[in-house]
Length: 186
Image (tube, rainbow, N blue to C red; front, side):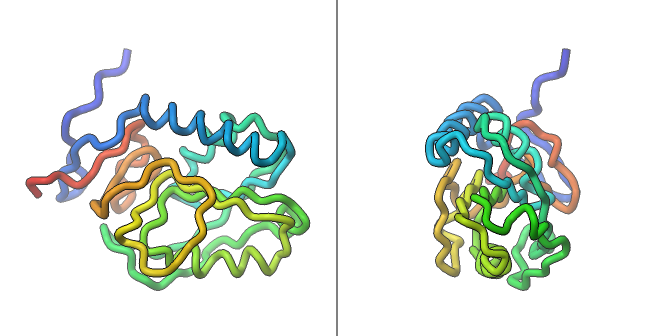
């Protein structure tokens, strides 16, 4: 039997406290999966997963959606420590054959500034998908600097830095089944 999750965790020099529990995440992901199934009429879209942060969410969402289709991964980089650097680099591009003329479900872990999506969506559109449905687990509307049309949002959250459920702080915390935020007394 696994030990209970700690009330606080230490990652590098920062302390984090519980924010969104494992059960609440799973319930929301199940509901999002049903909504995707309904929106895409039970079809077989291509799931494009933004690495590294979205891999845990994507695995649960793809299963919850009960949709067929293939999965591919893309990777961008914009974070340094707990801040989005504003410069987005495409490290692993999407596979063209999995995007062209397909309904694409783009799965992101978090949309905060919107700069990653502003840089990546034109790259994806150049591959001429039939449609793009942008899904994010977390959205920080108060941190958004550029407009982004998000089709499905798991949770809207304040601008505090978060880790867990795939999200990390300098490589640590991805394995946590819940989401933790930077501690208030930090």
